[in-house]
Image (cartoon, rainbow, N blue to C red; front, side):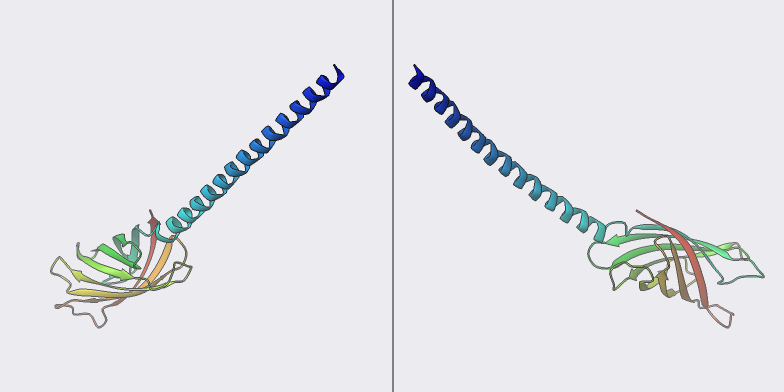
Length: 173
């Protein structure tokens, strides 16, 4: 009887060792799957961070065509072209003194990965017939604020300089 008991205990011990080995193997495979899934998620988040949040809606103010101490407001929508550093820009400026404005469609090019004070350049074609084109050079001072120097070409301009300063607030989405 003692032999049977020892054999029974030995059998139970072997079964426990085998099951714990299988359990450990399953646990290890599950851990590897979780690590791989975590790495994939991290790569996706880095890609989204690199290319996301470049579309923007901006409100800006410029000293172009000012009369006295007032500033002229503008609105800009930027739609990002994926992975290229280019954005398609739709922009309008309202001239308060003349009660009219200009509208532009253009492109903005940022040659560097986004960081604070990353420079960009751009150009646009006038669509209202009042301005022929605009070119600008600017930088994002922070994620939500930008400054630019802008040249607007108008055929019938009587002003000495068509260069203007621009400061604005943007929301990226």
